[in-house]
Each structure stands twice: as structure tokens, then as C-alpha cells.
Length: 329
Image (cartoon, rainbow, N blue to C red; front, side, top):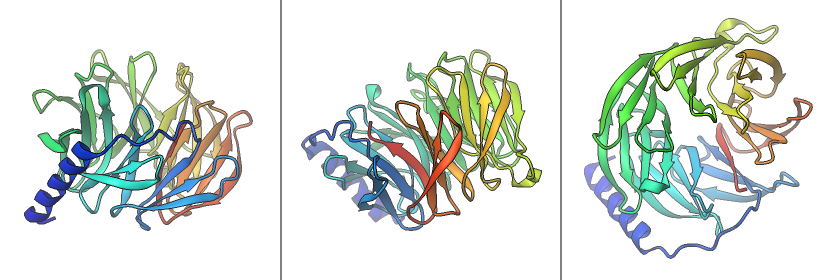
């Protein structure tokens, strides 16, 4: 993006964030939001009928999404326009933009400290952004192609993956610098933290594994390999990961293998595999943890999985190349 365009986006971000009146909260609507990389939109689904209730046009290549605490705003990383779009959840429309580095992919939201931590894939950096001002406080150099970002509850530790470097970085957000690294499997992607705060689980796409990091020592403490029945090892490409609130079960999407895996967290044993869609990517649990939603990047759909039976029950078409799913609840 040209420098003049970047300045305009920063001005617009500051203006929209500073001047916007807080929107009415669309409380617990249960609406399901799916980001689609190729159709540059968010598809909003009714939770009961799974029918499309709104097609929200956003900036190009929307990927990661996070609600603010009140669920009045939804932040959306849009990789091809180097911005995070701000969606009014009550109005279901874009009301602002925040400039990032080049090709934002995922981000972590720390409202207590008014910060966004954004991985910039092409810039090989993590941006520390003041949300209210819409300005970058630090641009932290990382290994090539950072993706996953996680900030702990204290706000003192930020973690980021480097896909090309096969690294997980520990970042001091106040200093704006990487302070430590740990080597993991090939092409690390996304994080899930155990609820007790002791471990970070990291998907490593090209080695077909999840690596486990001990947060106290910031060292690798184990790994889990995946191979669904009938699949070849090169087809198993873990990316998305989530955990149940009790920390007992992790669910991992296995990419081109078209499956998800249920893992017992304590024993680190695979419980079972479930067939879903083509290139299973993003994964989200409903608040009551009865339903799991999986974004299938090459199927242009999402798969609904019943958590009680651990069976896929329905496929719902969305846009092209769905990346992620979030739920307003």
C-alpha cells in the first residue's frame, strides 16, 4: 500500500474510533460469523436455521476475527488491504478501519490495555496497536511469515509463531521486542492455551503435529502426531485448534486430511477422528460446548459437529475459502 494511502487509513481509523458513538449491543444473538478470503465478505448465519441473514462486505481477504468484551464490535483482519475492519455488531456493517503492517493474518485483542497484537505475514512483524488512537506503538520484527498470536491475562507476555522460522517467539510488548524463542515443528500456525495457564499448544502444519510448550520454562514439553485412518502423512496439515473450558479436550483441524481430531489434554492421546470437509481450517465451539463449527477452506462451506456424539451433522455453504468462525454469544 502506498505511503499516502497508509496515512489516509490511519487518519480514517483515528477519526472513526475517536468519533464513533458506542453502538447498541446486539446481546447474545447467537449469530455465526464466517470470514471468506476470496469473496471479501463475512457471511452471518442464523444459529437456529443456519440460513444467511447478512452478507457484510469488508476489506480484501478477511481472516481472523475477534469480538470486544461487550460484543458491540467485531474486529476483522483483512490481509490484502493491510487493515483491521471494525464491524458494528448491532448494525452488521463496517464502521471503521485500523491500519496494520503488511498482510495481517491473526491477532490478539487486549481490551484491558487497549491493545491489538497483529501478525503481519508479509512484513515479518507483529504490530502493537493502540486501539483508541488507531496507531502502531511498536513494530516487532519476527521470523518470516508470522501467524498465530496469543497474549496472556497479565498482558506482559505475547507469543507469536513464525511459519518459515519454525519458531515460537516470546515478545515483551512494552519493550517492543522478541526476548526468547523456542524451536517447534515445521510451519507452526496457531495457539490454544490450557485453562490452568501452564501450557501453550501449537499446531505445526507441515510436520502434522501439535507441539506443547511449558509456559513456565518456555521450552518444548512434548508433541502429538496425527494420522487419520486411510490418510497419507503429507496430507495431514494441522492448523486450527481450540479447547473445552475445562481444559480436558482439545480439538484440532487437520487441513488437507479433511478431518478433525479430538485429543485428551491430560494424557495427550488422540481420542478419535471425525471426517468433516475439504481442507478443514478454522474451528470454534459454541458457548454451551454442544456444537462445534469447522471452516473448510477448499469446500467453501462449514461443517457442524455434534459434541455429544462427535459426529458431523450438517454442511452449510458460505463464501469462497472460509477462514474462520466466531459466534455472538
